Image 1 (cartoon, rainbow, N blue to C red):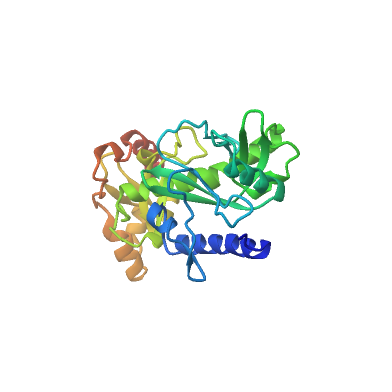
Image 2 (cartoon, rainbow, N blue to C red):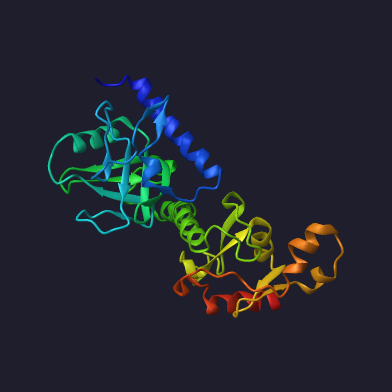
Length: 295
């Protein structure tokens, strides 16, 4: 028996609220287990299917979520620079494809889960199906709601394209970058070892707006918010051999325990590095940033 449209809408909105609450508590990725155990008014409604990349509850008129695994699949899923996710129809016609097209026709909001490692995902929501291509058997989803209102999302004007690419950098790259960096550093500040994910950021060594500012773990540091802000303002530097340096004027300043214990006592501190050497910060990137700090 189908749920009434208003209840379907209420469930979608509750899913988004639930994801928001998890993020606000510091979650930077979602496990398959927690996504399949979401509940609404005490009723379990899995947000992932057991064997497919699309979740179409039997009592819903349209698709609820879409997932792209961290593993390669037979389908040609991909994310364009403009923030459109290409998602292929299932290989056989049936309810999955019908409900996916219904999401497009109805303008229903979905959640999109992108795998960052086996069994773990970052979440994007709400996303919308903005294009249906039955000939090539695929749809396109917009990762930002504003992309829905472009006249032709698949063929953007130059000004629209630049705007969309900025959105993607903030909306797509940052959550993936944060998940991978905080995972590498075991949810701990590389400088002070604070272990509260809700108080941690994934800081770029080279800003993502600059050449070399790639969204890669080696261009990142897990930092608490005070050390991230200090690093961005060049009040704190990190040498290519992973030593913390504090601005000389700041070292001489007297301004209470936060300055003393939070910053001044970190001078000369050795960074806590990821367990895997391949995820250690790039020495070349650190050298570039340290030269700015020293200058």
